[in-house]
Length: 470
Image (cartoon, rainbow, N blue to C red):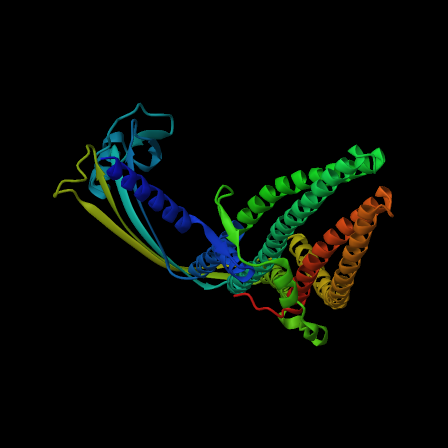
């Protein structure tokens, strides 16, 4: 019986471990970028913007296609309206009634008292129902043609905005991924430093207790140890925050655990590409240049739109309907009589004079168009400068990485020499502490230098459009 319980417990533990393995996601940097470009919240909404733009294009197109509208109207007169007929046209009231009955086929519903010179009388039935349908077709409208062009440009704007979002998310993933690696490797380094300091402190205390070392040596080591431990606690807190930031960028719940497969050293080596310095800037493929071109095109279309308002508008229409009349609600009965009517026509609307208001709008749109052309030229110059700056920053990051790597090796040797001197009693604790602080600083500078290489390369690639994001 006990064996059976133990076996069940082991199965549950195994199942739980397997389940946790299935739900934990692991990413290399490239995999993280690819995942974010599908699941990031901003990317998802950018895709929806493209779909919305396509729907808006059809919405604009549909306004120039046939339109059919139908309506049904029911009226119930609580009191029929009164019409005044001139009394001079008739010999007497009876003649009026006979005329109404013969000509209209209706019997007046009331016989109000005569008014001097007129005879008030009510016509028609108390209840009426009208059913009409209208077919309209736009024949010519200059603003409609401009609207079709604008709808296409709006789709391009949405697509370019999606590409821009993808690039921003790629950069954010690289930053967040690198920060996680930075905190993790900083923690490992700080733990190693803490372990070394604890051993040094323990040995120095024993030496001090035996009267072979000064109390200051113990205190110097304690100060250094406290600083390292404080930094270690801070890095452990930052690690948790860094993971949550990366989860947010990836589009994953911040409580979900993820595993990173890359390390800073490997990524840095992979991201040193000297060929980028010879890669020219292709303005036509740069997304910021495309966005500026979209802006110019949209302002040009707005200018055309304002000019098109001076053109006539022509619409054709066909209308048909039926009318039913009754003193009671008999419209659903078979013997109800319905009277049909129909009309066909063309409507021409010609703008004639707007007190120069239309002209002012057109001129303002033209000014905006000219501003957009100037902004495009400015963007072109800025991108050329950004490309040169990004190349310079990338080159400096590579140089700084090599320098910090050499400095770290030197700092290690210096710290080791001072460690030996201190152990043998020919070096002071102050000198040892200075060497240790120099080593710790070199370690952090080396980690940051590796991260800079990765980040600066990503910035340069985006400007040069060296990496195409679908």
